[in-house]
Length: 212
Image (tube, rainbow, N blue to C red; front, top):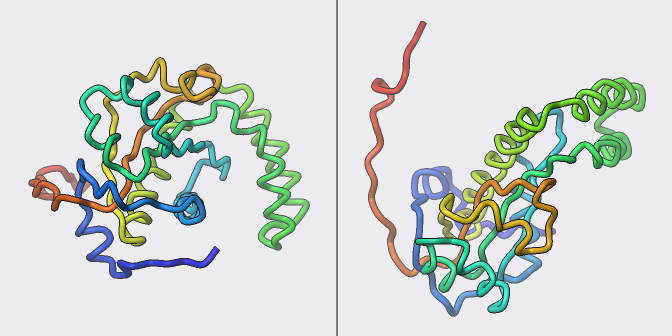
């Protein structure tokens, strides 16, 4: 996939990001570009590279109608955005562990013996984690991918809004996923901004930091 960055400076991408709640309804994002942005977002780090993030792109009118009653106070984003990106954490992400590490070997990024040693240690460890431990891991890792996607979208000329207020107990099943396996982490609206977004204050670093 060819990278098509429109904002290519650190200041534009990171310091210019705002949470946008209303989008230009005439601007759509092709599935090819959406996949490109998701691919770039998956450059985010994850524990032992298990990449537990899973994505559902809600873009059709029918799918948006399914999502609408589940997002409480965020209907405007759903109605106007090019898409709503549902981000889940896969509680059984280790099932793709061999595929991930085999790919690393095939791409010359890892020797075979290192792959074998790491898989022999990692897979049993992950399979024996408690539900709460796995939940914590997949949510942290998937949140990193969510932040990465917001920055990637900004680089592509779009804006986003992270949404945490939704019916977490219903989201997976509403889109045909096993609710016990796929833990909802975040919803991102994405599209071309139709507003400037709010200016917001941030605490000084001195207030929130301790040096020891």
